[in-house]
Length: 555
Image 1 (tube, rainbow, N blue to C red):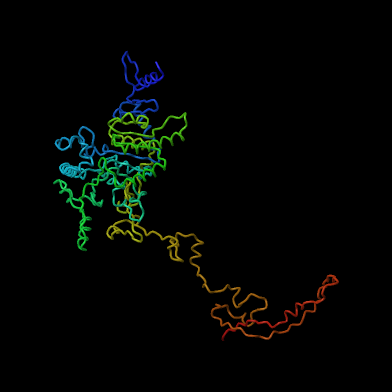
Image 2: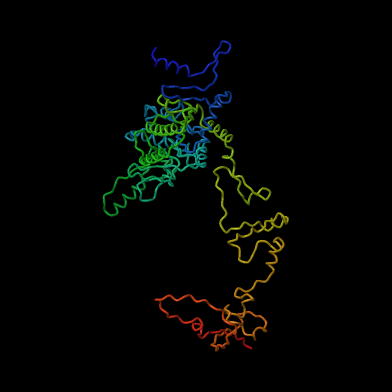
């Protein structure tokens, strides 16, 4: 037996783990290992988590990987919308089976009704329009599922890198994720890009059934009730843009142009996507941002374009994980596949975990484990709300709910009858202004609440801003030569602002020099060769006329 046969034999024995109990084979765990020569996909049966401890432990490890990831890429299909009444495509009761049952003489397979070649035949085109109108009405009555709300929660917690969906129902937009088909996502500038890449949170790979597009000029409009009525009859409405341009040309005596018809703005098989370049750019940007987790839900991974997208993301995630994870540690879940049916064998070395079950049930398990691991991430935020009553002035806001802000400058005042019915301790007191908005010289503390030193300073009269200190009054300059007149010393002190100041030239009285002998000054020896010229003495330099200020008080 060769080594290859031995390896395959060992791998087949590892697919399920059994134990002998009383001579009978007994399965230990519903966790199945689908092995290959290079990698291994672990399949977990979600309904068995209520009875098997190994399944619960494996699901808890998957939930912990979701909690610890910071850049999550989510790829979804029609399976996440089945719980709200929208059928998928490939199941026994899906859209393909429904189309084949209703129109057996028009299409051989249900897939043929979603192929771009159907527009070549008027009969298949009319059947397509009728079928799409019924599907659109059923989607309008549906509501987002817990899976859609979980995607919005990931985005609110800054953990969702991007969401890629095959669905055309637009339920992600209702949950709060801005899609590529939304009007708010359209770029209005002169750049080459048609989308606001930074604002787009959900990439719609197959278009949106809530919009219609012209087959001639590619103008897009919202699908209205008038459009649905014409689709139900198997006809398509004319494009308003083409009609306007054609009438304008005819008005200036030019040749009329072809008027296109409107069709549902969804992408069929063998048809290019109108935003293919923009979606390719978004994918390239997301791959460069190094995502750390890939979640695939509700899709069978049969479309070629989606298969390439998933493989690119999975390759990037595994390469980044191999560089950061030690060889001795247990490998962590990086690519998680949640679907009722198992993927094909080509995904055995790409998908790490396959969870068998409903997507909503798995999301509920992840949220339950998340609250157990990090309870703070799911606590409701308490915000002050005046309308919630005086007994409990805080209002609990759910995650993602918008908080209404009070307009700047607006004041909430209770009605007079309600305010008068309240006691003195329960009445609303005016809030003190901030220091920057408080008027100068005022304080939000009264005389009773302030300290004794503060009360004394508040009660003392403040001097005028222009008054001089008492020591410097009756003097304009502080020099010793400007002495105040002796006649002014007997006058009571008064404010300098009431005094008439005038400046006059007064002859200086020559004082006799003092009789004290001058101290002897030791002169330095004179060096020969230097000039014996001397500057004027200090006394002569100061023998100049001085100006003295005389303060004259009018009598």
